[in-house]
Amino acid sequence: LLKAPDKNHYTLSALIDYHLLNQEAEKAMEYVDAGIKKYPFLPGFYLNKAELLIKQAKADAAIPLIKKAEALNLDYNNLNRAKFFELKGLVFSLKNKPKEATK
Image 1 (spheres, rainbow, N blue to C red):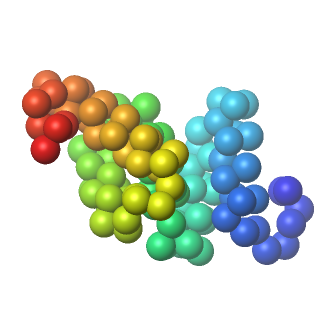
Image 2 (cartoon, rainbow, N blue to C red):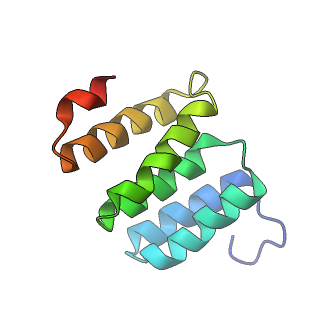
């Protein structure tokens, strides 16, 4: 996968998962950024980046990414929709505003 000259979104997602499993968040973020650049219409990469930022205690930076993912229409992928609600709840919980997560 690393040597593939043209990485499709499946390859990028696999590389992100691989680096996260190996606790290489910086390398995973590189592939997330590549995914956003190459596939700006796929919400999964925005959700991946938001999750990485939340884990780095940068919840404020994650909010625009979560909103962007929502704007890209999450209706066609249940995994993305579930991740969206998970991250939205996490952000508002970290900001001590859990009731806002349901809006």
